[in-house]
Amino acid sequence: ADWHLDTAQFVELLTKLVGEGKHLQNWPSGGFVPEEDRAAEHILEQLRPFSGEGGPISVEHVHINPVKHPKRGNIILRYPATAPRDTPVVSFVGSHLDVVFANPQNWERDPFSMTVEGDNIYGRGTTDCLGHCALLTNLFIQLATNKPDLKGLRVVGVIICDEEAGGSTGEDMVGVEGLQRENYLDDLIHGPLIWLDCADKQPNVGSGGLIQWSLKVTGKMAHSGFPHKAINAVELGSDALVEIQKDFYNSFPVHPKETEYGFESTSSFKPSRASCPDSSINQVPGEYTLQGDVRLIPFYRIRDAMKVLQDSVDRLNSTDELVKLQGKHGPDSKYVLYDDQGNVTEQGKLEMTFLCEPVQGIACSLDSKGFCALADATKKIIGEVKPLADTGTLPLVADLKDAGFDVQTVGYGVEDAYHADNE
Image (cartoon, rainbow, N blue to C red; front, side):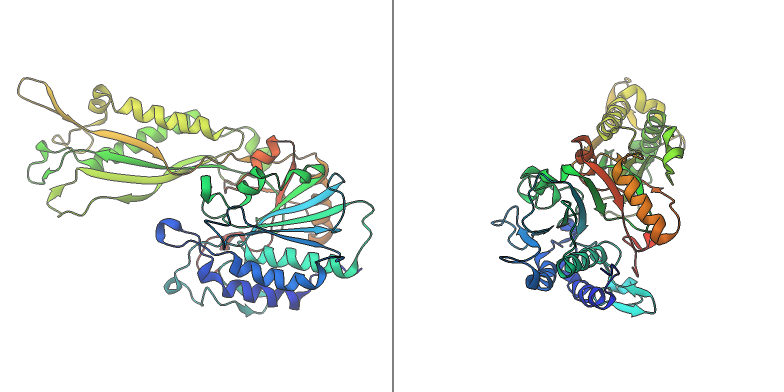
């Protein structure tokens, strides 16, 4: 069989998928809840001639919560269609039908219409991750067309929804976490599970843990001409952030294994958003909110990081620690206020909350059959093997590895285009 990408079929399908991009954006807090079935239907249409009774592949469109989320399904592909589920398998999991938000005003091209320029293709999802969905579809069409005898080996593809939301829970758990909970992935433990949602063509042997956080800072509003009567929430939040970062980096220093795995960056705790209630410039703000995330090297546990952050905030909320913290922004900048008798009348307050379910990072096995096969294939096609590792985050993979799956991760496309304008 001639195992080469069918470029025409790939481009045709990817053009249709990118064209649905407006309806695939996954940013619930911004008002964007995807309808992944709009993209799934294009994939299912191309696979229909090869599935059904007696067909060489089986195609299952799985909705975890069809009542609340009737337009958010996953696709499970199997070759051979009727192979026993307890036989050896190689599976490709994690390619997803949702995309991140794109603002057309920031793009040089229409993000929701695929553009082909030479060997480059542009459009939201071309790298992350509609291109992988089209690639996997092409693989199964070729399996169905060529009908190779794999001598007892099964090939399974799992195209998922709701990857970009950062870990949904309860009734909204419609993607891969729901598939795992409902036992759809159990039979994939009999061989390598390749997570197909990375980039740059090399095995990605490590990814980071994730928790998103919010730090609410409460001070005391006052006229800016009377700063001695205020507790400036912006200043308190800034100083508290520095102290929490010290605690974090002392607890999670650079790990010795980072060099072995080739991590491009180490663990991080940093803000990415800041906000105050609307007020005039001549008012010292009494409220301030910082939001951000933790990206944690997988040799540490993400729940341990959550405890370190909470303990740090609890420590800083004491009167003694607030007094130590103040004084960096002029003699009238205070985080604890006293009356004439020396009694505390007001003091700042810090509240840490976590905004998503924690995701544990993964360090893939470097001596498993799955890694060896992936490395050999990469060297054969690309000419070299240079494993990558970063603190981007992939859902569920660490849980699967802990459960005994031989999880490896890889992807194609351009890493610099991930979540970027002009992808």
